[in-house]
Amino acid sequence: MASETRVLTAVAATAEGSNTQEWNVADSTVTVARLNTSDNLQTLCTAASFDNGVRTKVIYTSAYGYNIPTDATIDGIVVTFERACPTGGATDDIVQLTKVAGTKVGNNLATATAWPATDTTEDHGSSSNLSVWGVGFTPTEVNASGFGVAVASIATVNNTDIQIDLIQITVYWTPAGGAAAPALPPSGRALVGVGF
View 1: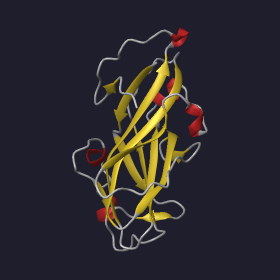
View 2: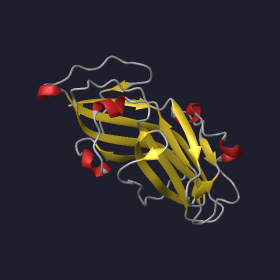
View 3: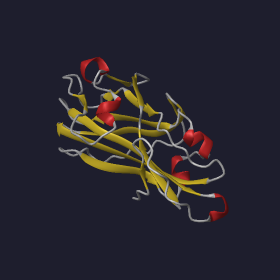
View 4: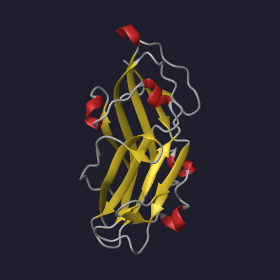
């Protein structure tokens, strides 16, 4: 099985349903630069209105730039994001994949795990069981610019502050015929052969 880890090159914050709480400065902290590297330059939500039961806008990430062979089989997908809740309390609200940017598909793998006070990563999905996402993916769909993940948070305490520092996706795949694949050469921000 081969694997390839990449980070987003496109992002947008979208209000939908009850997910209406803006990220800081009218969503202007929702940028590629703040979400594609673990560097303490975070996307923030510290609004006084981010209280118990309030949900952030959905952050849609896309354009990961995969180039997986089209005759391969996608075995699993793991989304990793680095997040923290320095003040108050918060959990995931949405962690869901996309095939078209801005449109969620399959299962929401948000967990009830409280976001910690300092930046910590959490994995969602499986390296070997694609079905946990509730939808299949072909290499063509993964390679497309619309492939990505939607994330949002919900406050569990009044006066909550949260931050996200990194969102990345690792795709696990088997080449046609099941033979071991050579390591892919680094391309862009790809981290090849990363396992979880």
